[in-house]
Length: 173
Image 1: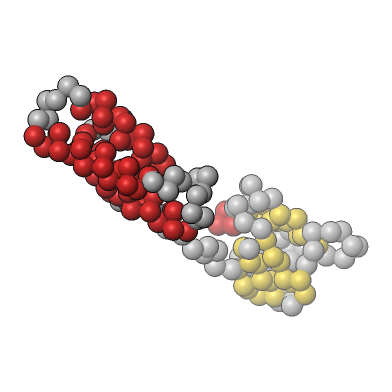
Image 2: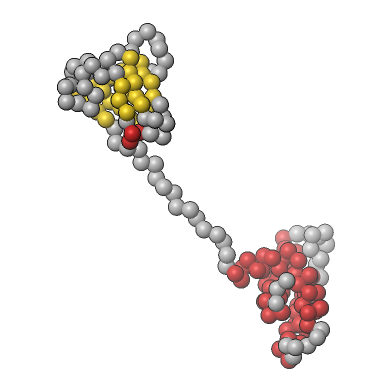
């Protein structure tokens, strides 16, 4: 329940919101009483007069409740207008995948000649795209070379050991 000064402020705005609602609807809308803006004007004027002259008047709480009740849904909208609340926008974190591994297999490369597995901790949580000698590899065993990837542990395994001079490209996607 808002205080009397707040109710006076909300009723002032509610009067305009009710008028706007009526202008957008039919003359005798079932949603909004066409006399509501006038009723709010009169009752809020009286509430403001009593509060200004005697803030300790014992009849103020009842009249404040009555005016607040007249405001209805418009009063809630008025609260939002006055408070200026609106929430916040969560900033978007851009998707930036770790840099890919691109190398020619040798005795000193990321995967050395003869390797069949490697843990790639930078890629944990990502899916993997593996290209071997400019041919995209699959995780399906079709009888040739293929690979497996554990997204949780980062274990990358290939079938068909890494051969000297092969071009490997491994991307996190």
